Picture 1 (spheres, rainbow, N blue to C red):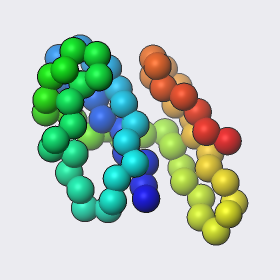
Picture 2: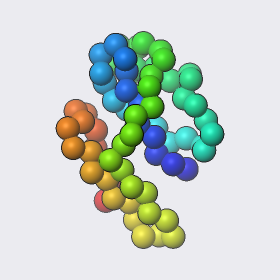
Picture 3: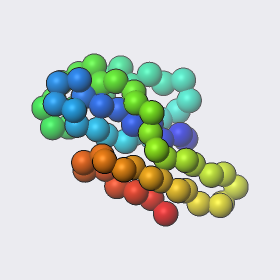
Length: 68
C-alpha cells in the first residue's frame, strides 16, 4: 500500500497514512485539532519495491518520522 501525506488546512499538522490506491482520505481528521478535510500533499518519501526497503526524506515536517 502506498504511503500518503495529508496536511490540516487549519493548523498545518501533517500525518502519514497507508491507504489503498484510489482511496481519497475523505474520512481523515487532524490528530491535533480534529478538523476534517485534510489536503493530500506531495511527500518526500520514495517507496521501493521487491524487498529493497523504503527511503524517506521528510525535511521540515514537524512530527514526521523517517523510514529506513
